[in-house]
Length: 216
Image 1: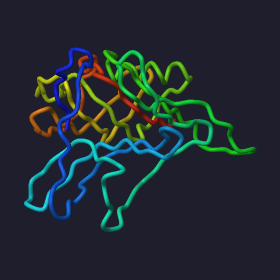
Image 2: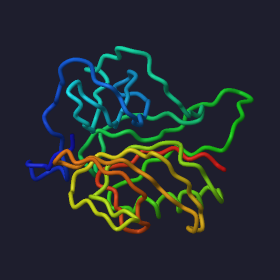
Image 3: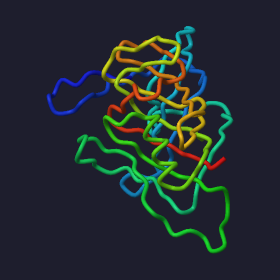
């Protein structure tokens, strides 16, 4: 789970690692697949139900987790971009970021943008700016995970916390703003899980946000 930083160096940190007994049922979540130290790596945020019925959320650690039953996954990928996890000087974390890759000859598909949004940028406004930069009028948000400085939802509810873990549940981006919506699930440092549509201009990124946009 997310936790407050105590080292005076990082903006946020992680809780201790929890390993629930028995079998845990995954409800939903998002993952970024890429590489770290030259080997395959997954960054995953999710909600799950533990054997006693308790709902929890946060990171699912790829090397410590065993998949006990088949899981249905919908994936989007591109041949022109790799996600690589490397030390980030601004945040002092090791983070995924997109790097160019050599595409296969003759490969075609919908225009897709793989991106990372950095600290203190409003996530909705950043996505609109990314679409404008690439000449995309409208785009579907095909997943994303990251952290926000609390949350301000469109229904008026708020999460007052610094460290959170977030994943996108639905979203659509219009380069000219009207029509953009971004729905998320979030867990804060106390383990509270919230869901909702984010209020534009009121939700800055805490550490990072990894996203996939597909032109509509």
